[in-house]
Length: 320
Image (cartoon, rainbow, N blue to C red):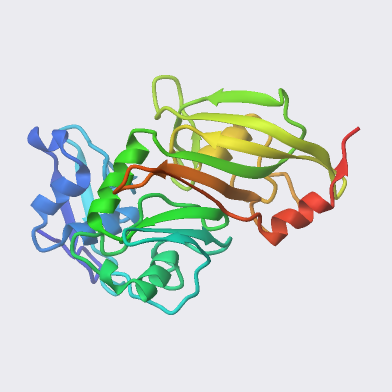
């Protein structure tokens, strides 16, 4: 039962996981244990850091925990929206049909609503032009979203317009039938010019970023790179890289480049100690290809390189 706790004006749910709970995702377990909360609301609470397991914050709804784990969920977001709302926000549309929308997401735009960004997101914009996405078969806060780009990453983003298309696209991602090409401007002159980074990724203990996993931990993460151009910019050694993530881990390209000591220019999270006048992290989702969720035809889309990215490239002094 919920317990408001001393000094709190919101309910707090505390449980100890049983043997059967150990085989289920934590959001599914909590949905059964907290029947007065919807699963969508529980997922939102988890993502906002309102869940602790054995005293440590868990913000990933799909994780599983062993029997005996102490779980505490604080329903501390009663004033936040229960679902995303449509807004009149223009989108740069690369392609659209009855089941599919592909946009060129600008840097600085969040993909879906969350704490601190309840409005002005891609989801708000899509709902403004596609009211039919307000469907109970979609996640109320992420309708149509099958993959994401970080706030400061620009480029091609695919959105499903029907629940069936969303399931098909999600399966294509899971089966690794989606191929993505990113452009990155990085610190240093990477060597070799063509390389493979195969290093599992896990959440960093501070829960604010990802990190290369300890032995035996983390999830597989594979990225290949190709150096396109090396030069000097603002007195710094920099390079333009073509990046191909073969797995879809959170912050994968940013983590792998930082791990190899070639962090992305302007990346405040993974390029600590590497200052630059870049306006944001210089990462752009240049190209994406995938099977159409209805016809199976291979679709490929390319997002134009944004002006802030081009400005840095044009200011390069080529390496000798």
